[in-house]
Image (cartoon, rainbow, N blue to C red; front, top):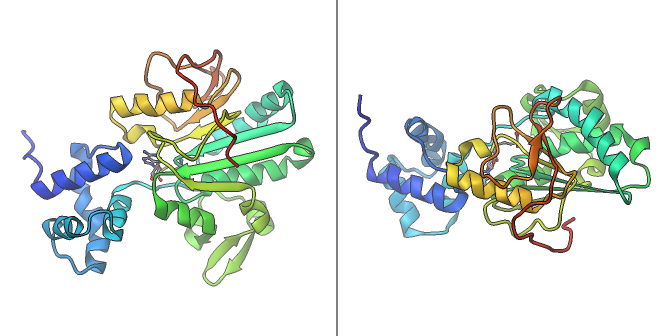
Length: 286
Ligand SMILES: C[S@@+](CC[C@H](N)C(=O)[O-])C[C@H]1O[C@@H](n2cnc3c(N)ncnc32)[C@H](O)[C@@H]1O
């Protein structure tokens, strides 16, 4: 059966999403868009998508636009999401990086970090491995295109429901304290991470090369050309020996990727040659 063409409002919302994030509203996502936007519309007293689009057009670049784009993004995340992958990072990737390091520095980038659980999981993991990292300069940069997600990540405060998804009891007791109905992460963990709003398709805040890059459950939402562009960004910030972690079922795009599949480690790739793209050289972000 032929799908009806999208309404003007859906078309405009899709354009907005694509312009700001590179993502497209596939047909399967279009029908869910009104459901995703309903709480925001209710809060703003708007009764239809046409009304929402008209209000955005009256104030282009305003908070309603930012909140609308945010509501169309999928921010699903959890602590230690795909636990086996975190185990592989802890038991294989990090020890190998440590063995191959020329100086005692470890640079990690979480691209598409959403509300912070992924980066905090890595920070808690490094603390757990601590004696091994004593004397090392460890940097974790975590970026997301969504300002609202980054604000939540920086705050490090999570509702009970998030604590019940993947977090181990030892980490909960060691690194969180109750804050009203929520849980607040310890400053010692929060201070290990630099959270920045940044678009993987036009990065401005990340610079230099990283030893470990996580880019999980984001490439999936890009059309082929944008996925290739995002993969070029990842390649630019890698060097031979850099580990890259993707989400389950995600694949790299583009023919020039320096990353090869680590056969024994699912979702994990390692750069086995220099990127053949012009490298963006800059001071390391921290
Ligand atoms: C489904 S979440 C994944 C979060 C985390 N990586 C995980 O696997 O749990 C995808 C995130 O990618 C972000 N994102 C989407 N497009 C982006 C872009 N162009 N640049 C940076 N982040 C983007 C979204 O805002 C969202 O927070």
